[in-house]
Length: 313
Image (cartoon, rainbow, N blue to C red; front, side):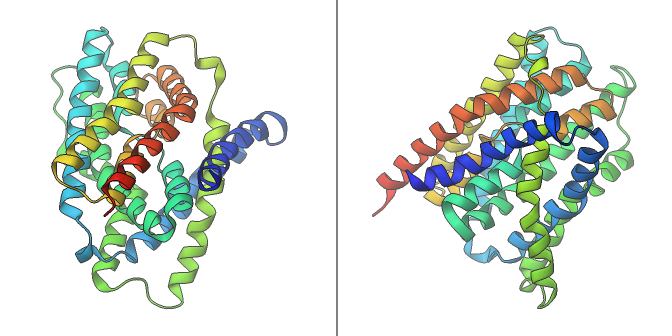
């Protein structure tokens, strides 16, 4: 029980603390906006680079892990668009359902996997991030660009490529994989980047908590429930099914499924607001999924722990 408490109490406790700080002590939006920029551009990329650069890529079943995650993301993308059409949503609202269906709060993933599985868990968390971010970034940016000029609009490849390659998480993944192939970060630089990375999880979860809003919950109840079901139940189940089909080892399966079971990223709201999406719906989906994940994440990890125990020789 103690490892589970060590994993979940800090993760969800920081979310609650962030919400309390926003309402009682640090009420200025500028404070949180500054912290979010610091985390997004410096701290979280440092964590990803540190974890990825220490991975022995040759020893990982990287191809099978990638296929498990990418297969689930492909099905999830189609399911999100289909769900939006069934619900009769306009394009802007569809992008919110899409983000709610396939994006993920990687800070929670790092916190939980690091607490439960130590350094190997952090390394696989970084690998999962490196596999998910490029696909999700490409799909979501493409969805927004398609909506800017109406139904007959054609995306500009250079604009899409620029949006993807200037994402700091994408850059961090590319740098981390490159450093892993070269043998890791050099002495002196390694502890500096690691120190920056360690600050990302606590500060990031505080910011996520501050961004959540209970006032958004009632307006789109049906859409929120269906999108949350897709993200928190269907997506991890799909990932597990692909992992089982590909005979992915237990720890890699556990981390991949955990990351796909995470609620959507809090920055989804920022992206929706900046790129013409349905920001109100996105805020509602983000809050709903984080609340529901208090129940669904422990459930998935309990099932995965039972699977790992049964698979042990």
